[in-house]
Length: 144
Image 1 (cartoon, rainbow, N blue to C red):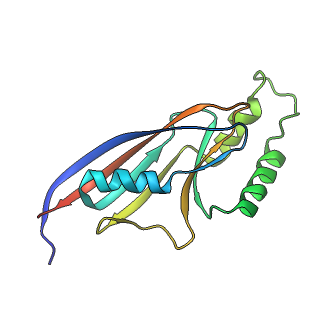
Image 2: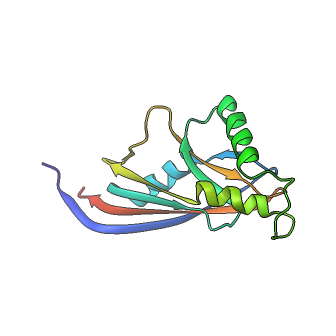
């Protein structure tokens, strides 16, 4: 039987740059680094992008799927439509559809992602941006 220490919460910001509209940034390895620093072995991690025009998803990180996602976002919220919000309404609508946070279980120090799953950010704004994602690891630290 495992022995557990105290409950803890560890938070860290990950900063990165995007190249422009519908850019994909795989954050999985950087999130795993935060989990490792936390000392938390069992619990959950919550990843949040504090941006109105950014998306966080868990899915397969392949070029063909990225092209399919670009096509889907373009069909759901085309950039050429007339919206009430100024120049980047389509960016806001795209992020509204897919969301800005994810929660993943953590067991024995490992994220319980599926075989092909990655955690990635999708830029929906009209230009390159500096972005931040907040990672919170919450749970029990194992006794040493």
